Amino acid sequence: MVRWPAHWPPFLWGASTSSHQVEGNQSNDWTEWENSGHVAEPSGRAADSWNRWPEDLELAKKLGLNSYRFSLEWSRIEPKPGIFDREALQCYRAMIVRMREIGLIPLMTLHHFTLPLWVSTRGGFLNSQASRWFSRYVRIVVEEVGDLVDLFITINEPMVLVVMGYLIAAWPPGGRGFGRALKLIRRLVSIHADAYHTIKRIKPNAWVGLAHHMIQFEPWRPGLLDYANTRLLHYLMNDRLVRMVGEYQDFIGLNYYTRQYAHWTSGLHPIQNRPGVNVSDLGWEIYPHGLTAVLKRVQSFHKPVLVTENGIATRDEALRTRYLEQHLAAVSAAQKAGIDVRGYFHWSLLDNFEWAEGYGPRFGLVEVNYDTLARSIRPAGYRYRDIIQANENTFPVSVPPASTLPAAHP
Ligand code: FCB
Image (cartoon, rainbow, N blue to C red; front, side, top):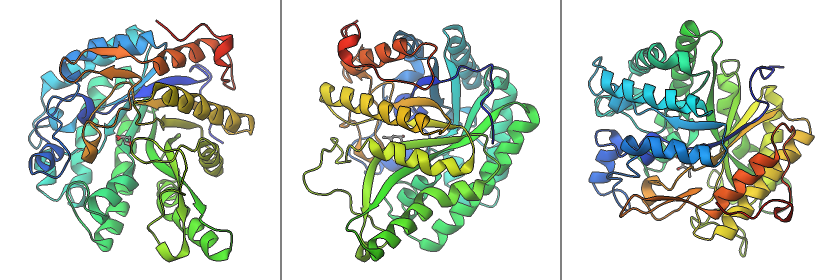
């Protein structure tokens, strides 16, 4: 059993973003994919967080967070093979220094879906040199900012990367090959392991993991066939990669959004929803109990767990607030059942570029006006702040009824 260090806060209250979704990046594989017309709209300047990060961090502070999950943009740091942009590194360093000054523990993701063009045009992570390239980048980063960061995520959602980019061609590089997808899974595991060792060599006390996307799969109908298919989906999509990574993860990072159904005739293509269920603007079912269920599943790995993403695309603040409360209650239920959940990072701190779907979906605790780039905290953000305040020094976490808290306003 791995123990959460006693000198860290018992629970990380956070929110997440990723570089490409908020910064405004122009020279990675996603920009190219967007410019060749594959998505609803190109990311352009996004939320311009590359310039507005001081304001974004102040907003995180205003929400009362004690941690912030963000990612570094590899294409900024190493725009050409082996050529590192010191200015970009300095900018990230300044960002992390500021986080610490205002009491935000940095949770740093090293790869969140985007690759520098010089990597993607050479076959991306399937190139036999990719692990060497990634570890070199990781080493430079950890040498530069490792003194300020204790928590690292090497790769965000490896299985989503595989499915979207290599099986259903919805994301770059637009592949559809089962063989290549399986090869990529093995490759990502070894890229992660090399990066894990690279970090540990420089900073032995660092905590390093991945953010695993987990869907709560359930049988469409009672009966053996759908049940067997459910087990298969859980194994292939949720558990297999975690098992393959094995000991080379100090915590389990878990991104949870929704439930899907297994029907034996649909094989590896789960059914998204039963008719009539409550869904987000992206059509994802709202199913808080699924978070407790996936947390219980990862208990078998005997590691502390961080919920590294959870949130809803909606323009309805009452719905966002309820989603937040119900999913925090699901975390609390998991803790009471003995699962060592040590953090919750809401997706997202602010509205951002939602990949193939563009700017329509609104995930932010903070609203971004894309014309003016003005930010404003949404009611759900204030409710989150009040829940965090009510939980000062408490563990397991609890979600007090709104009526017992000050009204959710500035
Ligand atoms: C996750 C991604 C994140 C965001 C949310 C909605 O799968 O990690 O970048 O797009 O979904």
